Amino acid sequence: MIFGGARQQGVAIIMVMLVLAIVAVTTAALVKRHQFNQAMASQVIHLGQAKAHIQGAEHWAHLVLKQDRQDNSIDHLGEAWAQITLPVPVEQGFVSGRMVDLKGKFNLNSVVSGPSAAVFERLLEQRQLSPKLSGYLVDWIDENVETQQGTLEDAYYLALPVPYRSANQALVDPSELGLVRGFDATTVSLLKPYITALPFSSKININSANEGLLMAMSGSITQIKAQQLVTQRKLNYWRNVSTFVNAALGQKSSENQVQWDILAQIATVSSDYFGLEISAQFGVAKTRLESTLHRSDNGTVTVVSRIYTP
Ligand SMILES: [Ca+2]
Ligand SMILES: [Ca+2]
Image (tube, rainbow, N blue to C red; front, side):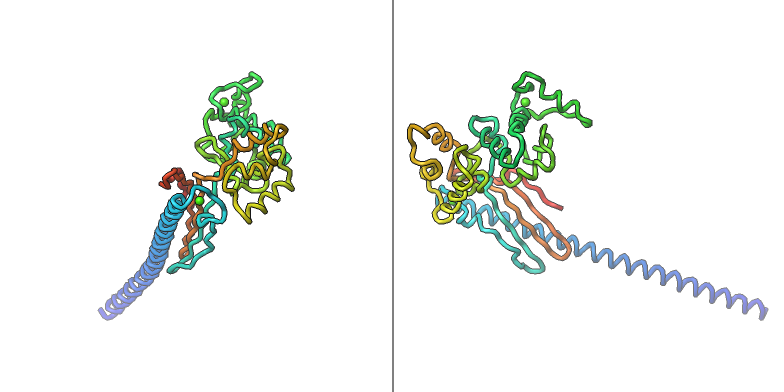
């Protein structure tokens, strides 16, 4: 009996120790899980804060663009919308943003219309790329399925290791250029500072186009002339197209009439498409918004596309 009692006691002690061990392991697991849940919760809260601030900044950008159209119909880099917002500290985070004038870039979709193809060819040549690429882009966008040489556009695309067909419609995003014959990632990145993809063929805003694009706008604009035009613009933005064309090519005369008219035809001082980039960081949560905005003549701003990363 005595012996049996000691054994029972021993079993009881082992049981207690076992229970204690289980409790310890469970507690550790619970603490770990609690910490994980807490981290998850703060990540979700931070991401929510970042998105809320981005939405606020986006709303503010719309108001700035609307006000700008109410104030004037000329758009230039000295205006409020063009000012870059460096990271601004807000409660528990940072928000930064910038807006670019998409009319100050070459609209790839305008390559199918008249003098714009020549602008794109000059842009390609400036970057030591073949002007032939312009023709491949035209075939990619135009409705028909034959090249200008009479062959089938898709003969090239269907022979690729991963075959596909040409879009035969306007590009939605400039990155689509990478699918077009002759354009690879390097080519696209060389062209990136100069190009955009807008829904309609469009003119180029001479108050925001960079030096390279100004130069490509006419075969008669040299690099030195383009630099002069940018310097001149910083002192005094272009208020109308004819003042710009006079500065670029000289007064209209019988000698320069054709180039003068072509340059005037593709130039504008007013913008209706803008690219907005806003970044926000709260804790470890980083969010970035890239959107394309359209502004109508009365100043109404609508979102054409919106991409969040992550
Ligand atoms: Ca303006
Ligand atoms: Ca086509």
